Length: 518
Ligand SMILES: [Zn+2]
Image (cartoon, rainbow, N blue to C red; front, top):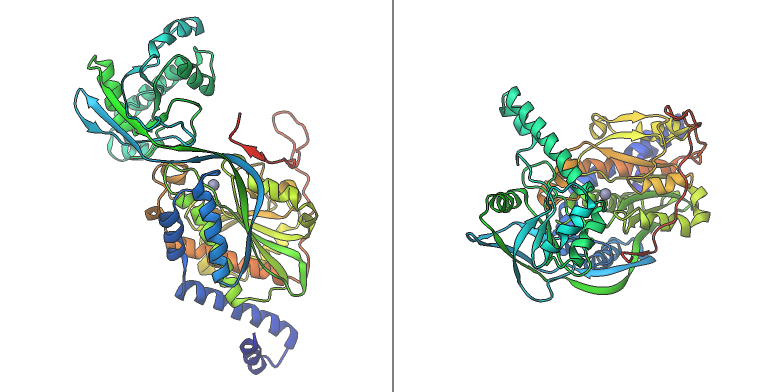
């Protein structure tokens, strides 16, 4: 700060006040960019977190390890941080999953246990497979059910193609693409009906198969791209549920349908750990002039565990950590207090952030602004006003200080509308906090990385993440420096076009404080 003032003294003779704040802003912005560009820690922290620790499923030891790592990392940057307990979750630890086809020929298959799936009890289970058949009604299904005894049950449809649509668009004739889509639509609808005829939900179906003596459930939750499956949680309580990649699932399915009677061996070594405490990691740089007013950075810390959660929400996480590191170095004495929330259990229903909002109710009116990022590795291309009447004024003012290079293709939408869910900014919007989503361009997030087995370090586009860390740091700096408290007046929401009812602001909801138990 001393240096900046000295420089200002030389270049700012008149008109002093205005010149001081503008020049101070541009010097700080320039210093933020320099630090982010020349001393970036993004690659290092990404490697430590995604490769060194790995996935961050709530209730697992890895989640706890990640929280402890984050506190230690902030500590090494001189930033006060702590883990704040908000609940508990069913504890589980992923182990080795090994799946092989052992007849009619041998092939090691690409697949994995779903989250919280039971293990195979230290054994390898070898058995034949059976496909859920096309039956007219639930009575017929109940009659068929004993057939699953001693078998792995295949519960997903056979995909007619393993090529994503963009690949067909590029190379197929239009006739052939149309034919494939029609065929796929019909098969998808027929499969939906086949499952509906059982009159059971997906969860009830899994449990019915388990109770009827199936040895495991095999699915394939293809994510419409090359090599990608979405890996969610199991509904079984005693037998393993595994996902198998489209190619291998198709192989088993076609062999079974053509009477070749394939057999698979499955070994899954997960562990149940009882109930585990769950946390948010909170770090702060104390404000000097208005320490009781807050500017918040926000990103959920947990992930699904089919891969390492590198873009959901690893990239949001490292963006906020890097912005904090830079701010501490360049702007160590902010006017308002800077807080970052690394939320636990967003994936199971925004639980960490909902708990924070509930546990710190008196803080909510004192939050100047919150910036959340949670849709992948891309450059931020949209910022909306979240339904706050005056958002245009202050976000516009703050964004004006961001050099053009760091807001390329950025669109703003004012006054926008409050988020009803989807990510943690919604928890704060519900409490009337000016909380904004920094929304990224796609990089095919929805199909390739979101909740998939391919959400890994190599998918990170570091230049884009660097861009976002710079953008976030500047917005936070500007929000801290703003002489005025950002007003949180809400717009009158438009009426529901279908019912004509007046639009309603989303309501605050309580988190699940004891999760993963029935
Ligand atoms: Zn996410």
